[in-house]
Length: 619
Image 1: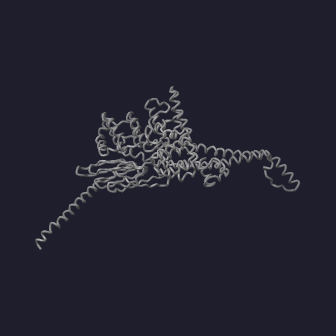
Image 2 (image 1 turned 30 degrees about the vertical axis):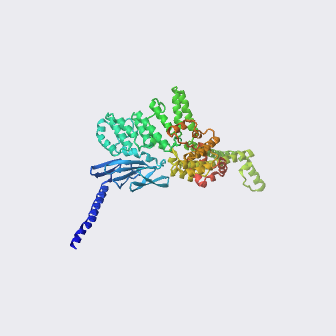
Image 3 (image 1 turned 90 degrees about the vertical axis):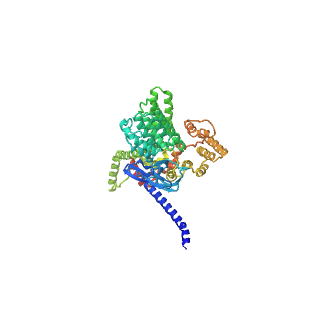
C-alpha cells in the first residue's frame, strides 16, 4: 500500500501543479487587463493608461463639452493584450502591452455601445433625426475590416477628430481657426516631446501628426513638411479630416501640402459614394472644409483662386453658391479675365436655375410670401372697397328708408349690396375670392416648406445613403413617381440593389431609371442588359451625359470628367434633377394643388387651425 501510494503521488501532484500554474497565468492575465484603465483627467481630457513589463504608458484624447456634445467615451479590455476605445463615431484598437494604437475606424453614426467577441467586436451605432432613432449593429474584424458608410445626420461628429487633438494642444492645433497665429519657438520646444509621444502612441490619428508638424515648423525644424505629409498619407484618414487639414495647411502657408490633402480627401469623398452635386448643406461644408480668409471682392492671389475652385468642386450647387459664383465672375470680368468670367457666370446660372439636384434652391420660402401678400392685400382691398362703396350709396339708401316709413309707417332693414351695380358686386366678390384662394394656396405650400425644413442634414451632405434619409423619403413625402425615383436612388446608394432595381423598372418614364438600372446590371456582371438600359436612357433623354459615359463615350461635361478621374472604370449613377425633386416635395400635381386651394383656409393638411397658426408665424 505504501509503495502504491508513492507511485500515485506524482499522478496526483501533476494535475494540481498544472492547475496552479494555469490559475497563476489567469490571475496575471486578469491583473494585466485590470491595469489598463480609462481615466477622466478633466471635463475635456481622457487618458488611457496601462502598465506592463516594459513600463507604464498613457494615451490622451480631448473630449468635447458634455453639455453641448453629449458623446461618451467608452473603453473595454479584450483578449490577447488588446483593448477597445470609442468616442463619437470613431473606434480604436490598442495594444495594451506596447501602449500603441493598432487600428482606427470611422463609423457613420455615434457608437453607443460595443462588445468584444474574441478578436472581433460587435459595434452598436445609433443615428437619429428629430425624435426618431435608428439603431444599427455592425461586426468588425480587424484583420478584414468592413465599416458601413453614410453621411451622419449629426454634423457635430465631423469635428471629433480635430477636437481630440485641439483640446490637448489648443495653441498648436487650430484647425484653421484662428488664422495667422504661431506658437513661439520656446513654447513649441516645450511641447515637442509630448507631441512626439502622442504620435508614437497613436500613429493613425492625422491631427496628432499635424500638431507635431506645426511645432517643428515653429522651431524651424526641416522635418515639419515630412511629418505633415505622413499625416496626409495616414491610412485611416478620410475626407472628413483631410478636407479640414487642407484648409489648415493653406492657412499656415503650406500650399503644396494643402493641395495634396485636398486631392486625397476629395478622392476619398468620391470613393465613398458621394457626389458633389448632392452636397448642398452649407453647415456640413463649413464643418468639414472650413473657410479661408478669401475676400470675395478682391480674390487676387493664385492660392485664393485655387481655394475658390476647390469650393466649387466640392459644393457646386449648395446654399449661397449662385451668389458666390456670380460675385467671383464679376471680379474676373472687372480685371480682364473675360473667358474665366464667362465660365463662372455659367456656373452661377447653373446653380441658380437648379438644373441639377437641389433642395434649398427650389425657392419655396420666397414663393410662399407671394400668396400670403396677395391674400392680405386682397382682404384689405375688399374691406376698403366695401366701405367706400357703402358710403357712395348711403344717401340713396336713406331716402328709400324714409319713403318706406312714410308709406307703411315702418322701415325694413335691407341689404346694403342691393344698391351696388353689378360691376361693383363682381369686383368685390372677386377680391374676396382672391383672398380666400391665396390663403388656400399658401396653406398648400406651407406643408411643402415644412417638408424641406424637416430634411435631414445627411440628405444634403453628398449622398442619399443611410437610414435617416431613407426614412425621410418613405414617411415625409407623399407616394408619387418622383418620390419613388428619389427612393430608388437612395436604395441604390445604400447598397439595396434589388429594391432599387424593382422601383426603377416601374418608372420607365425617367431616363435616370434606365441609366441607374444599367449601373446595377453592370455591377452584377450583366453587361449586355446594362448596355441596353443605357441606350434606353439616351432614347428618353439624348442629353444624359452619364448614360453616354457608361456606353464608353468621352466625358461630355465637367462632372463626367471628375467621375472618370476619381472613379475610373466604375459606371456613373445619374442624379435626380431639380424638377423631380420639386414634384416629389409637392406630392401632387399643380392642378390638384390649385383645385384644393379653393377650400381656402380649410386646404391645409391639418385643417384651418394649423393653417392659420403657421401663416400667423410666417407673417
